[in-house]
Length: 317
Image (cartoon, rainbow, N blue to C red):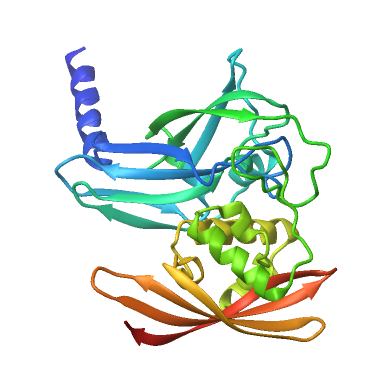
């Protein structure tokens, strides 16, 4: 018995030294760009959740984060009757297929945080309207080492019955109501004006209403090539990830920057293509930075949408 106890103690000491101490790491979640949620696909009506990992200890916190976050996090959701939701076929297929998981190592000093946004519908099947309690598990050594698990706080999620007027695309709604927003046949300058005002008011649904996310994504050659080579499913995920990154302000910061004021200077357009030139002022502590934005717009089925832009610095005031 003494010998067995000694072997167990040595093994426990070895295991403790092999894996990092994550007792001083905290994981929290909150809804990102909260809107009205309905049953349906992840693309049509996503449930974006903002995930934050924080180092609350005194030592450097190191963990792994997979490029495909399905190997780093799990969502769990329960109904008020404590019935657990099933995982999507996508996540089951990925985790049961033999494949290489690419990841990066991240280090956080005391008090530092790392955040990202995930679509809970990529993980769980929200097929029925109900009230759910949703939480997240984070695997700092990836899913294959899931015995090392950090739990988040719990959120209350209301999934409403699908509205009869719901379209096949993402359903934006007016703030505080269930009124579905639809793009209107307005002029290119009005499209740009409404988009900027929506960003000033942090109304993401209205901001994306007149933006062609697919064309914006393909403006970068690397993303364009990857998108062209991807399957339909992976392509849709790329667009959703691109949108989430814009909302998180981690890429293309110029298009999501919030001006203090703006002035539309010129609008030029043919039957299908056009540009709208706008002067925008960004406020800093002791000065304003002035920039010229040129928004590229395209008309399809009577609707103008922004599909690209360029920015020129005009100095300070």
